[in-house]
Amino acid sequence: MSDRSVQQYKTVAAAIRYLRQHSRNQPELAEVAAAVHLSEYHLQRVFSAWAGISPKRFLQYLTKEHALNALKASTDSLTAAYDAGLSGSGRLHDLMISCEAMTPGEIRAGGEGVELHYGVAPSPFGLALAGWTRRGLCYLAFLDDDLSERHAELLSQWPNATIVADEQGASALLEQIFPALPQPGKLHLLLRGTNFQIKVWQALLNTRPGQFYSYSQLAAATGSPKAQRAIGSAVAANSVGYLIPCHRVIRESGESGNYRWGPERKQAIHTWEYAHATKQPDT
Image 1 (tube, helix red, strand yellow):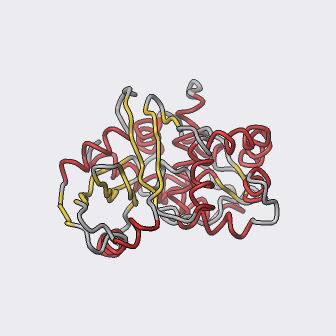
Image 2 (spheres, one colour):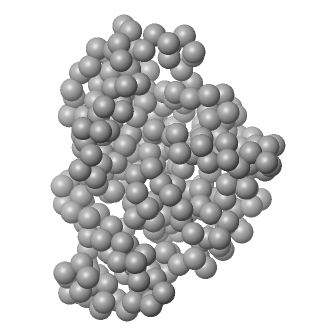
């Protein structure tokens, strides 16, 4: 991963921001290109380099109609995803992802006797701050000029740990999560949350890239159809971005909804993930 990918993401985010602000007018590609200060030709190149799709297809993936169709298609798969999530492992390309929850005693100890490594590295969705211990990745946050805030958030979860700055380790982790070419491997997550939150996160870990799920679908699948507010709280409390794919949870209306790391980034992840999951020829 390079700083170039970060710059490409910034262009994508700016385009999404413009589209969100002018969605009622359905702007043409030329208008979007002008808004991000690029020619149509260069905008085409940026999107193709970033996600392997054209701006035209990119815009199609951002529509409410696409989101509603994806919600409908995901209905039958969500209960199975939840059932698998109680004991199974997720898969991201060739990367097997497993997880475990911190015990109440470990949380109370605040990381005493633990080495917490952290570092910043580029990703397809901008710079990211990663935190990990010898037991696994415990934190992954995307940055928007808020490094000090995110860093404080990470450290607040481990107040008694020994802190180790490790930029090289962070780069290696991000390369493993977002490889140029899929590589077989394993990644373990160490999660901090309530029993209910852990169950929701495990279920999301087993959902499929390119699909969307509503809060009510997730609530029904967990056997708590009236727990939509609790589902929303669990999704919002997730501190392992992308790998625990809370970005796949959207509103019943097809609107993308809120996201801990910004609505533009959420839609960028939707588009990038769907393009990679479907691998359709570009048009």
